[in-house]
Length: 588
Image (tube, rainbow, N blue to C red):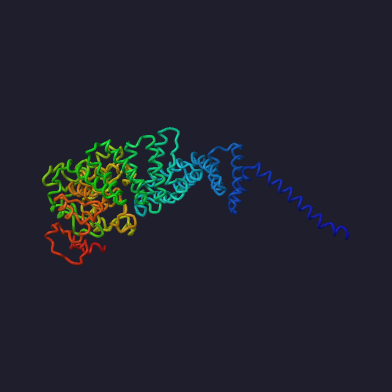
């Protein structure tokens, strides 16, 4: 008996070890041969926080299920889950294969939008980890279209939450792109055919345009746009309008980044391309002349800048006449047509235009019912012109027709006139998030502003239609009210490439020829000075102080009175000098 007592613990422990070995062997055989057991093990390890280890069990579960007769739909959900585990294992090639397989099934097609968004975002990031920028760009370019107006107004309460999620994922992907693209050495866009290369270039261009408007994403934008530019240049040539279009995004971006030599090279190429396309005497060249001269001024190459300005004035003199600015349009000042409107230059809350007309009656395509107020614009006719042709809506219709023809895109009026009360309601609904202008400081109240839709969403800088507006709008009396870098609206980013303001042809021409670049409100505030000097043949000189901007406080006029009729007023800010009756509006 004593001997048995001594042997019992040893026997029991040996038996336990044997049973454990047998159970482990059985368990190992089961999870290697039974799909359900392998899947259970996968989920258990994921729950324990070991997704990298779980990935092998998930892969085994997929393989066993398919051998047992399961079809692609049966294992689609599991593939998506295993892809998540493989992400932790950094097996990105397998991640992309699994997700692509899952997404093309009926299961993938029937996912709720937010669930599908998550998987597509994961797939795009897997492509970026593999260095496949083109495939990632294709996915995120689709996000850009699905985001719609959320790209322009991310905080607008009227936009669907799903659209906002697409826009948010795009913003978050900026850093992932930055790790893959090189802004200093553009990547060569890959594709099986020239058509594939151009399709990828368009997607890179659209994404680059998106990131160019996001603070802190300049390097990402530059890398994407530079790759797109080089691809189009290689396939289409430097003179093609699709290649030139990228100049208007990449050039200003290089300028902001301090890459002035790169910006100069782009603008030179664009200028010569447009010179060959439109003729050496075309006023359309003025945009590229002004961009290039601005770069020369920043490099203190004033002689070259001045030569360009003189060339532009020669083009304008030949196209529009030597006495093009001889008449001081006081009527336009009184009737708000060429007055500044912003938080610094408010509009009286009682102001309402008395010449509103339906834009559709003048053949302007409208995005909404043609009879509502928002689809109306001021007639603002030229008294000395043809009442049916020389007015705001007729000229907008002509500009839209031109740009629709050049771009092939659908263009329409999204928003025209808004009353003070309507603007106040829109601003209140927006919860002061800065994406809707406060009442009293909106150009829409004047009936002179037109928000433009392209393909049923706000116009973007990456649109071919935008290039056409930038080149030609001044010929029809329109200017871009809120250019990049402006501080006219109470928000951190008030760039609005869709918002075009009618100021009359003469004023728009003067702004292009002599006004400060991308400073429309400052120009309009000092307009009487520019008009007086231009009528005398005096224009700003490269490298010298712009006297009209220096003396704008003394030269501002209120309610249409010319500056010479104004008594000297000390210590008054520009808004009060311009419009004494609107003191309270700026505070709203």
